[in-house]
Length: 234
Image 1: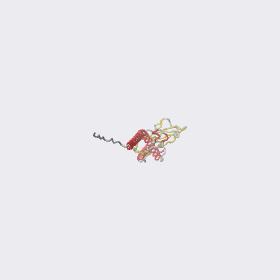
Image 2 (image 1 turned 90 degrees about the vertical axis):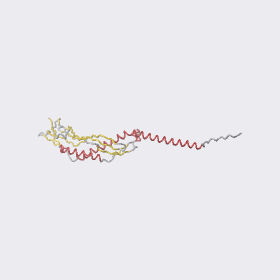
Image 3 (image 1 turned 120 degrees about the vertical axis):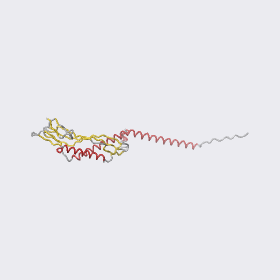
Image 4 (image 1 turned 180 degrees about the vertical axis):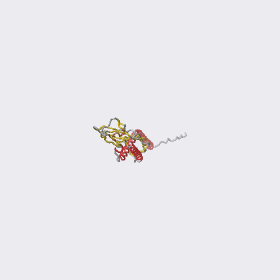
């Protein structure tokens, strides 16, 4: 009887099979870790983006307002209320006429605007922090997080308007304040993108106490560029 030869089945050694199993588990674990990191990073970016934009705009607004106040103080320290406003009184000491020095006020306003634009454009970078505590709501993480450098640029024309305010402070005494309202836009340059912010500032130029009887009705200093006389109305 002829022998029938059969081919033996080749089997992988058990040790090698186990090695393959461990390798697969290792790569699976690495994949899961990477996936978790990607999801966490994306979630953090989505959650932190509005906070980042708000922080940039807040920092930019604070810096711009500081520049506005600083430049006005530098210029106005050389001038007094009497340089801007001339008050005429009658024989009884009552105010009959308030005349503004329009030429000087316009010159000062132009100089202030020019200095503000120049200072904004040459402001060093501002550091903005995003703390993990604000994003995650975990207070112990409030001191941790990345920081970004942002820059400011004047984005357009600075609009100005002179305002005046009269306030009775005592018998026969009136406090007169002259304000400069400024409205401007700045561009915020960040590593992520460029954002814009409108900034409005109301800054005191000068003030003085007027002694004498001042009627309750005035032609105020508003629109000073168009009229240089403030006539007191009876």
